[in-house]
Amino acid sequence: MGALYVKDDEARAMAEELAARRGLTKVAAVKLALANELGRDEPKRSVHEIVEELRRTSSYTYDPNIVIDKAFWDSLYEDDE
Image (cartoon, rainbow, N blue to C red; front, side, top):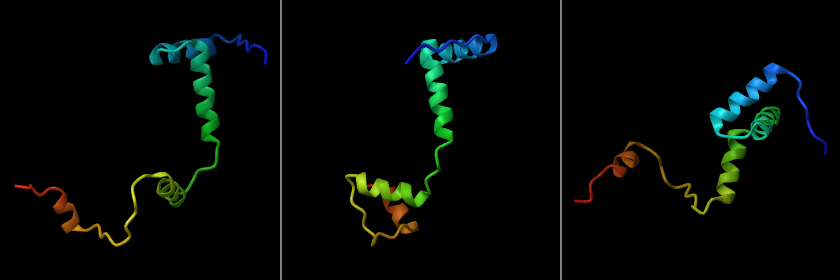
């Protein structure tokens, strides 16, 4: 791929400001900004899809018999004295 030349003072100033804030080069700042904008256009995943992925990839096991109620939360804060 070839080089990208931006001949816009405002775009250059924004790239310099982002680079300074993040401690990046101007090229890295432009790549970060473009990647973020492209990511915003990707389809959003539902909470269900995210939870399913976490269940598949997590080393923790899921126990559907655990009831998350007040007694459960209280048990997390009990002292073992």
